[in-house]
Length: 167
Image (cartoon, rainbow, N blue to C red; front, side, top):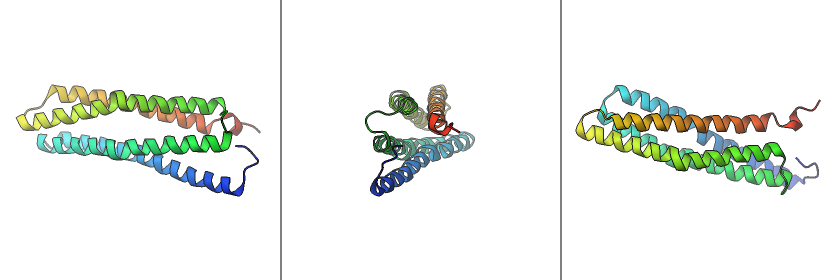
């Protein structure tokens, strides 16, 4: 961080960090709940599974993705406040990770969530398990794991940046 910040910049940075943490909680929090909902639903029958998948889809669209957006916006504002127009290399790496999360989410993960939810509803209508549901659920899992690994990579870059390793 630049050393010549004003008290106003300092307070703005603290507020942005707080909002950034809220965005992180919104992004990560529902993921564990969605996994638990899916596991519970798989055991309790097709009608419950269809409703559970609707809940997973809603939380993904209405909580997880807005949390990601909040993290990205506050992250960009903090970077601009701290480093100006020339961010350090570790921060550029973090931005690349976040851009890949957005791309993966919109191109692959959200469509897989939508299709898994659609096939769960079809299976409930037919009262018969659908292999397509499990195929889309597997895709959703793979793309979700990719996002989680990218998120952890961005976190590692932020926590182990060169400025923290100086003695």
